[in-house]
Length: 75
Image (cartoon, rainbow, N blue to C red):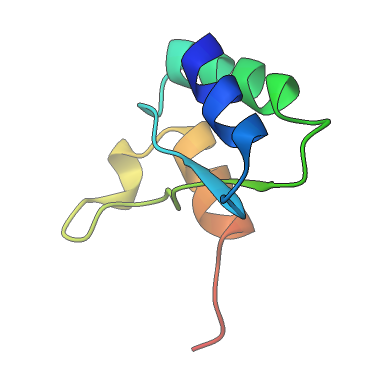
């Protein structure tokens, strides 16, 4: 993580995309890294998440459903 912060601090970046697993550990890691980068002039984003194509809604947990609703796009 220190190497990432150092590279961003050196400049040349406008965005850092968090591509961590959609788990508690992955979300925690992404949050920690975004906090480390918060004072730097970069946009910190994450990959979109939601319901997988072909999945069945009754097997979707509330976190995935919430991500899908929050990330919805105009049709």
